[in-house]
Image (cartoon, rainbow, N blue to C red; front, side):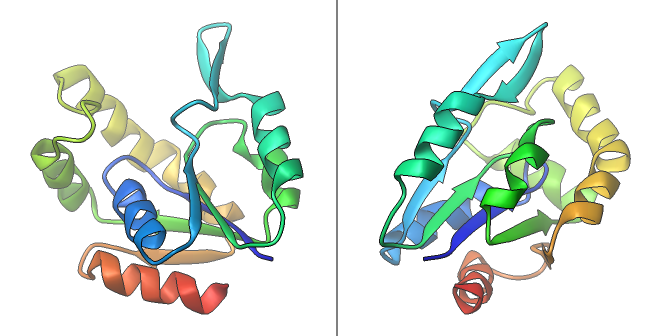
Amino acid sequence: MTILFLTGLSGVGKSSVLSEMKNRGYKTTDLDYGYITYRNNERLFDEVKVHRLLENHIASHLILAGTESNQGQFYSSFDVVVLLTADLDTMLDRIKARESNRYGKTKEERAEIIESYYAVLPLLKQRAQVIIDTTDISVEEVCDQLESLL
């Protein structure tokens, strides 16, 4: 079965898409919760936990989401790497309005997001197999596109 990895910057819709895909009956895991470790003050995916999750996965599609600097080491385990994007103003508006996640509410965090938009997003685009711009489409439309990849 397909292992699909969603990546993208804060505010592009990863959590909303995961929630809708779960509602549609798919197994989903947000790697931001329970799969993070810190090494030398750098936030990373916990290699042991992510490898264990992937090794124990059988008999269904699996949709994972997250964005950390070490995610590339897992790409060979994913069938499809999907980058969700949105224009910067849309991302910042979504972050300001959301209540499910506090990240991006401070001036410093918003500056990090803007910096990532210009420095990290181009790197994510280079490695993604599929790019979906969520700026002007609904979560349901994004999920329909993801289902066509499974």
